[in-house]
Length: 374
Ligand code: T4K
Image (cartoon, rainbow, N blue to C red):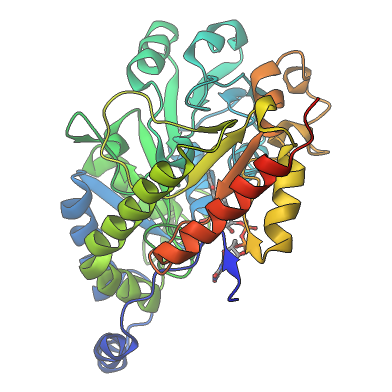
């Protein structure tokens, strides 16, 4: 039986990529904001419905740069239930992460936990639209406005996600996307910052090019965060197929829901309120009535050749560089601590067929039936 991984990159027809490569060979511009880079920025603004976008080599460098663009210092309130890149981007800027607990339904940063974490050093909030499910944007903005804080959304998972018709990527001050191979839309490696105005985009563009504003003037200690022409070209090609790829993800999502309906003790993590989802992940929680632990489920799936992933376990707050922080304790993060032990993301990607999905659910159903009854 063929192995099933948690995700696989979506690859458009290889033959079609040749035309883009020929164009790059002809242009002889390989990087530094060439024609493919410009075209992809324009195409993404249109597709995503956002005013300005700045492409990056990956989302981690984009996060580091976004914090610099807004001159964030001191402390930033963030979620422990995410990929480690967000907290690392704070450390790279000499900023202290302050972890606040997550909402038990959405698994996103809980706005009810933010105010208690604010100190005189707090300058910003960095929430994550975890699994592409939108945060409580309105509640977070109310707190930010009341305390004069900036909001930088880690929207690495939220490509194309809309809420009440609008892109979630225009919420807050800046949003960061990831175009890593494992994401809904990929450029092999890649990322972007969504900016609200031309001036902010210009500062970001300077920062991702060492701080150069012209041939002889450097205005900031910028970094090299530029996306190459090959990556941008792959993005342009991928964009032609993205609606079909997301539609297939939606079918898989629906099939999982139908098939899992009769398996007791499994809770599907749901987005709160109406949203146009991208189905980037299929997270479930293994509840006590399922009978065996999440780690036992993970091991059974693995034995069956199914490489599900425990995103996001361990919590970021438990890694050595964060666990000494006062906000990193389990008593401060009871919901995140509990749910990190229950969560598992099932495989979802366009090349997964219906039989693969039924195979995954078959293992889950079998584990539940065989679970010891106490
Ligand atoms: N913020 C958030 C909320 C994030 O989730 C991430 C990244 C970031 C920021 C930072 O974005 P980038 O700087 O990466 O743009 C993966 C990804 O490396 C990472 O991008 C992602 N989040 C994270 C959630 O997952 P791993 O260590 O789980 O990936 P890996 O290599 O184990 O791949 C998972 C599965 O995907 C493999 O079992 C097989 C499949 N795969 C993977 C790759 C790379 C393929 O089939 N082909 C491939 O090329 O971290």
